[in-house]
Image 1 (cartoon, rainbow, N blue to C red):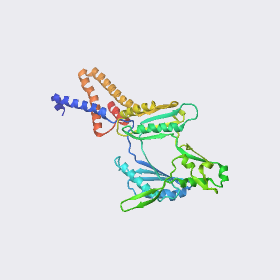
Image 2 (cartoon, rainbow, N blue to C red):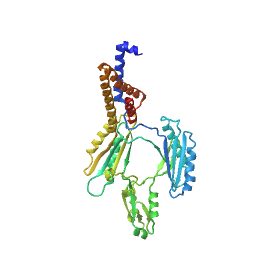
Image 3 (cartoon, helix red, strand yellow):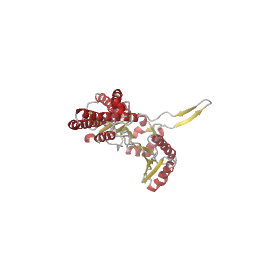
Image 4 (cartoon, one colour):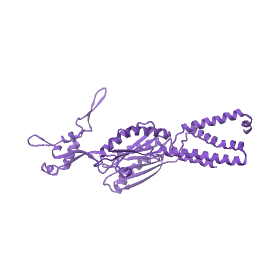
Amino acid sequence: MANLFFRNTRLTILVVGLVLVAGAVSLQSLARQEDPTLTRRFGTVTTFFPGASALRVESLVTEKLESRLQELHEIDELDSLSRTGVSVIQIDLADEYGADDVDEIWSKVRDKLSDAAVELPIGATEPEFEDRTSTAVTFLASLVWEGEGAVPMGLLSRLAEELENRLRNVPGTRETELFGEAEEEVLVSVDPLALSSASLTARDVSNAIARADAKMPAGLLRNASNDVLLEVGGELESLARIREVPLRREADGRFLRVGDIADVRKAEREPPSTVALPHGRRGVVVAATMETPRRVDTWAARARAVAEDFRSEVPEGVAFEILFDQSGYTEERLGTLVGNMLMGATIVVGVLLFFLGWRSALIVASALPLTVLAVLAQMNWLGVPLHQTSITGLIIALGC
């Protein structure tokens, strides 16, 4: 083989050119990300049963869920923990199932949990399933109030939702999430004196509002061709509609309504489910994660363009900041690879120039970039992205 390339100069030039072109094209097309993508092999099932003791949670919730999950042979191990009011089950998949199988397995897990949900006691919540992944957030942005007065969390949350929708539409976005947003709820504050004078209780008001919120179907109309679902109008869609809910009929024929004895308004839910403190100040954080494998620099450039367009629409008093951009770290690691390659080539050329002369130094030194480009071409063919693990391996290989 060595003689073949030595005697055939055209073949040598052709192969070297092929390696150069393939490596250069692969360097531009290879997916880039900060960390390698790991298979989602672990999951958590959380079920709440408020007021129940640990023993009741174990017998009425945990055992029923475990018995359903044990029907799946893809699960290697179940580790459960039952405490007062809560059941937590850890799921570990068997080692023989790879990345191509996990989505189907987790879909089966969700189906089993749905089947088991109907067997849970009254008062227990739906099992919440989360398959844990190691994928890092790709892009983080924050909205913080810098104006006077109290922090308008409602305004910040609406702005964050708008930014989230825009980032979700960026090609290559896998998921987006908000942290610290205000969750609005309708707060009915009953006047105790008015309630007492009307001979009503807070539960009476609550039951009346619940009965007025028509969300369930009222019936089914069947004929020979199709079925028609009947619904009752009057769903609670506004504060005015809640204020008009009748509580009882007075002797003079008038109705006592919720608005007569209570203050109905929208308010922030307390306590909030999440709190975000960018630089120690209350705000809302928008997180976006890129699909893998993709080029993080290309995706991040699109996300930054969306963020800059959004920045021009942010009202006065609201500070908008990009907290984290993963593409900078990726570019830094790629620059480290190129720097190490150049440094290694320089050292080799210098040593060989001193001992063997310029011809031998040129031949041996050219092997370094050609080897790296050949490896990049093979990584592109195998679908291995550039991340800190693969780049570290290339740097170590250069040192050897």
